[in-house]
Length: 138
Image 1 (cartoon, rainbow, N blue to C red):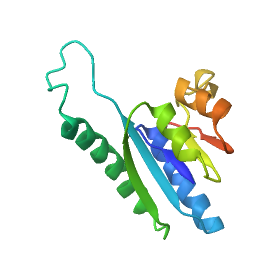
Image 2: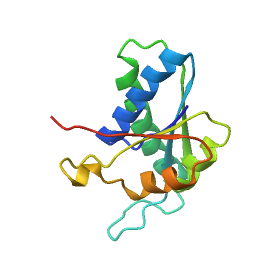
Image 3: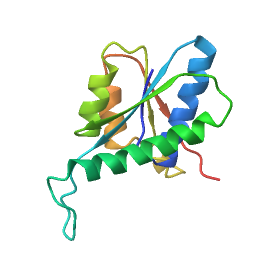
């Protein structure tokens, strides 16, 4: 199973769901975080500093995996950081996967039922079934 993780509560919920499902069916999980160089005004990092962007993405991914792994699930979770857009990274990782899991936008109410652009694109173009996990804020 491949899971998209961006550090949002919805993506952590998606990872948690995937780990539980993987335990139930005896599968492994590949958690994928994609990153791109920031291009916003005020960005103070060096545009060629690969280590900086990858390091932030790795920390986000490792934190999510640690949070979910603490739930007592004996499932192998491989964590992979990919340079590139989230959609391209997830669709590439989903080739050959049994399932792709992504989080919803999680805004609650009617808007919570809507998919973000990454989830929508994955649902429409993934080479495998897709599960969208809704985040229910307390």
